[in-house]
Length: 107
Length: 119
Image (cartoon, rainbow over all chains, first blue to last red; front, side, top):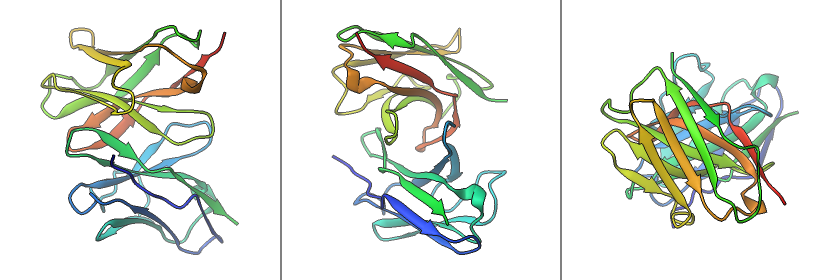
């Protein structure tokens, strides 16, 4: 089965840069997407097609890909960025898959 | 403005069948590349994709749950229905209805509905 692997947690101080990785064998062939989920809320798309930001998402959120790993980078982290972040991709069979999620803690 | 809203029982008993309805507005499931997916999230755990129905009637299911799931659409009512059979306490989760872009991502989410499986 197709899996995406994320670190369970990442911690950064305010103003620092947070990097959250997601690894999967099919990522060179399938787009990756990132979602932010705050407690008690539905997830919100923050990056699509590896690097694009939906309207309304701050410029400090960016995405990149290298080989089988994609990275969500949050530059100048703010307290409001503390949340769970999920990567997601699509399988060639038509199914969808999520990573296990990463809890970002702003110290 | 795109909105999606889930409806269904908050409590089901083990072995029962769960039926959830997604009522959406702001887009049509007859429009090219539009899809609707169901996603669930057990309390404190990760998101899990369940099923998807496409504008062209294609349907896809999670490999691990496909024997228990049925997804259908009613384009005249702008509704998508998910049924899950043989419910178990491990199926306790918030179930989300989402707009799914055929290329592969979810751009609009419902607020979610918590379903508890308990006798």
